Amino acid sequence: MNSDLWNQIFGFDNYGQLLALVKNSIIAGALLGVVGGLIGPFVMTRDLAFAVHGISELSFAGASAALLFGVNVVAGSIGGSLLAALLIGVLGTKARDRNSIIAVLMPFGLGLGILFLALYKGRSANKFGLLTGQIVSVDNPQLLMLVIISAVVIAALFVIWRPLSFASVDADVARAKGLPVTAISIAFMILLGLATAVSIQIVGALLVLSLLVTPAAAAMRVTASPLLTPLLSVAFAVTSVVGGILLALGGGLPISPYVTTISFLIYIICRVIGSRRTRRGDTGRLVPATSGTAA
Amino acid sequence: MTPSVLRLSAATLRFGERTLWNNLNLEVMPGEFLAVLGPNGTGKTSLLKTILGQQKLSSGTIEFRGEPVTQGSRRIGYIPQQKLLERGTPLRARDLVAFGVNGHRLGLPFNSRAVRRQVDEILESVGATDYADVPVATLSGGEQQRVRVGQSIAGNPSLLLCDEPLISLDLHHQRQVSELIDEQRKAINTAVIFVTHDVNPILGMVDRVLYLAGGRFRVGTPDEVLRSEVLSYMYDTPVEVIRSRGRIIVLGAPEGYGVHDHLEHHIGSAT
Image 1 (cartoon, rainbow over the protein chains, first blue to last red):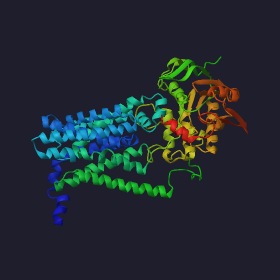
Image 2: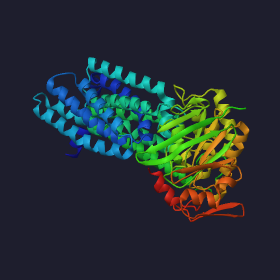
Image 3: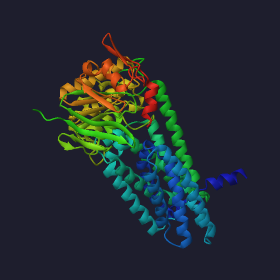
Image 4: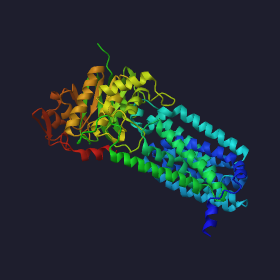
């Protein structure tokens, strides 16, 4: 019994043949890791973790509507995402407003999604996959769409990176310097909506946070360098998705528990490293801080 | 005659029925240090917002370097209140200064050698070299404000706006940071507009004071404005200004101006 369970969770029979089948998913997964890893540090510094969750529920509603009406699921998912991202971005400029808007949108999105899925008469794996992720679903046209959207998000992030960082960590000063902080914020919400929509295709709506938030949160535990943070975050996210897909392959279970577990373990390790460093007093100072300077 | 950095002509700011200031005429010259004083809710912060183009005047005009104000400007340096940053925020002291140099430029944050050298020089000039690579979130309040001064002077602004930069610092650091601001003002001949609820840490550097209270205002040297008769008139109630050992204490002002009432300030700053 125990070994049955083990084999169900970690099965490696016919691994080579299976691997060929999910090649697309691995490519898609790695790409999503890059997108999630790059956008994650901004999600953290802009305090949008909860917003990601809200966006993903509306994205789920969009995707399940698309499934029901037989149109492109990725397109439906993007529609829901962008709508949610813009609503949150426009109505929720203050943190408290934002949280209440997200809390209002989220159950509504989830409810709508459940309605559409209940009406849908097709394969039930499709339904479950939208919530908890899937690997075999990525066919060639879909892969192309994921690649294009991911490339757009990455390219746009690279272009606005510096002003976006400035506006994210230091909004008042950025505004005083004449940066279009509001426009930057709306642009970021659009990119976040796109990133969420593509992530849902692989890890599912419920677990998007493990891709867009956890890797960045882990990276920020071990570094405060603005270059190292996104690099580490990308490395963690890619490891989680690709590792998750490879492990999930044999067992026939959804991929999300593997992805979320790897990403969670990385976070734990980074926390331990980070707190050890703090305890040693290793903060990067050339001269130890004199006592009593803390305000 | 040198042209003024900032000029307000017949400027009035009104929120509904409430008039914050009426018919304010003010000209700030290059290198001048102007302190903006007054109790909470009298429009000190609104004045900064007006200069930054975030708040429209009800009537009158405001010009920065001879042009109507825009939404922020690269020629303005801004020093905000010290605030706590989330631990882990990917931002070191040198990154904050670098934003002052080229934070508006598109692209990835790879800085040229020239920019890096400029950042190093600024860090050096504000005495922050020792913690240049330390995350801002782990710096003490005084250290953070030193770095802020560095960030604000990057790009040699014509005007430094300081929004209560000394709040939550102890007396020692209040003096250090204000002296640093004064030093940099002289070095680059920038005008300083310094909003504060306590004039004492900067009393020795202030050229003129703009005092806002009760919908009225007074502009003049500290000796002209910070007098019992003047403040009694503005508050419409007997107020006594006491000078003792180079400090100014205001007694009897309705909202407690002159005492270190941080709690009051924090309530006020939430609006």
